[in-house]
Amino acid sequence: MCGIVGLFLKNKELEPKLGSMLTTMLATMCERGPDSAGFAVYGAPEAGKAKITLQSPNPDTDFAGLADAVSKVICAPAKLVVKSTHAVLTVPSSKADEARAAVRANHPAIRVMSQGEEIEIYKEVGYPTEVSKRFDLEHMAGTHAIAHTRMATESAVTTMGAHPFSTGPDQCLVHNGSLSNHNSLRRELKRDGMTFETENDTEVAAAYLSWRMKQGMNLGEALEKSLDDLDGFFTFVVGTKDGFGVIRDPIACKPAVMAETDDYVAFGSEYRALANLPNIDKARVWEPEPSTVYFWERKH
Amino acid sequence: MRTIDLATTPLRELNEALHRQKDGANEDNWEVLNPRGSHAVAVGVDAPINLDVKGSVGYYCGGMNKKATITVHGSAGPGVAENMMSGKVTIKGDASQYAGATGRGGLLVIEGNASSRCGISMKGIDIVVKGNIGHMSAFMAQSGHLVVLGDAGDALGDSIYEAKLFVRGKVKSLGADCIEKEMRPEHHEELAKLLESAGFKDVKTNEFKRYGSARKLYNFNIDNADAY
Image 1 (cartoon, one colour):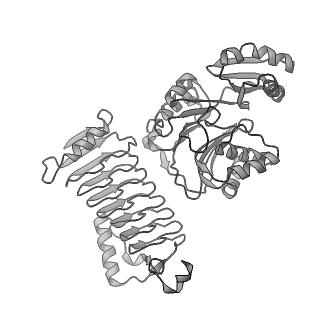
Image 2: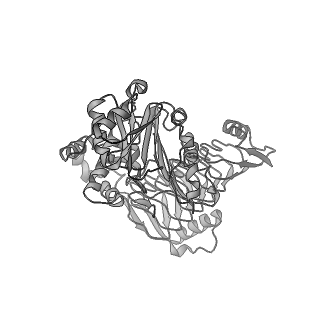
Image 3: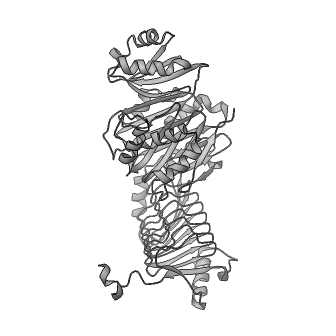
């Protein structure tokens, strides 16, 4: 099954409330995905800095002294903020790839969840409301966010199998459905240099979009192309640094409902997820069409 | 009038109270507040009561309905009036996928749009949609009527049996074994009755086209024996 919620704010005044709005939305989708949950929040960028979100099963030992160790390798300052099993490592943008490589090489137990100027990803096995509480989603601010509750079908219930998946800087994807050609597509993408952390079908969809964007497509074009190359059932919600997109496969049996006002664009697997949003009674509410790309971008 | 507020009353209590209503019940007017997308609102009602739901509902609202007149003053999630037996269900807003699926009788009126698979496997229900319907609607539809004042999506009436489809707007494509058929006087009469009972006035029946089964798929054809 799985549940998806997403929120893209158009009104800056709502930005401090992004986390609390998303927490309420996520809580309505627990039954659709009780085995694990995760969320990506875009916000709080620091000029010239990159954020790398890390995860460890042993945060007390693995995160102790990590900032200093990375700082020594990259010869630049590194700051680490720990949140339960996750931690956000902030380094100068120019050193982000080096810092990520240093973590991988010297701290094999630590997993990289995301990397970018704005994105932070938190995901864990557990009941969705427990997961959002654990990472204090309620008090996070930002411009847009996507959350997912998982009922696993294609691969194991693990932290890394939870959504969102991130396969490129400031990119993420969540999925309701299942893909049938993920193994062959994974092989093709690997040949072209993409790397994978899991056997999960959704990670292949995320990597596919990252791969298309690497070739120069924008998110909208990459989503359009995915309709030709991905086989299976999917409703995807994707995030980029300043974009938010939705696409459903041609059969469109995985549910989706959207709402838009002057203040926000919201996505829910069901209307329940949208029922508590401000002025929902006056919002334009609709079901996204099959094989149709919906894409919003923040103007600077 | 009995009012039940789903913000304070569990859904199960609402449905239990509705199930206690029988023919000739005294409480024949009901109102449900704050459905907020709840699933299974007013499923399995079996009494001639009026029920107004003030807001949008989730999956399966009015499923298996018998005799009751249910109006949703909002939109409905997947499977509204699924397997309805009789009575009337009206959706003031839009309906999600498989509205009226497998319905055996009664009337389902959707005043907005219905999405994919509207009337899938319908078996006697009448469905009238003021707006458009999505792809694969009336798939394997066996009997009953589907009336669409707007457009129909891809593969309308795929593998259809004996249901009758009337569409006023464009049909994106017809499914296997579904063909356009002649509108004879009796079809105009049937359609006029359906439009009237759905409350849509000033709609001309001659603006509609009729679609139905070519009857080539579900009858065994001896020329195809080699294929088995």
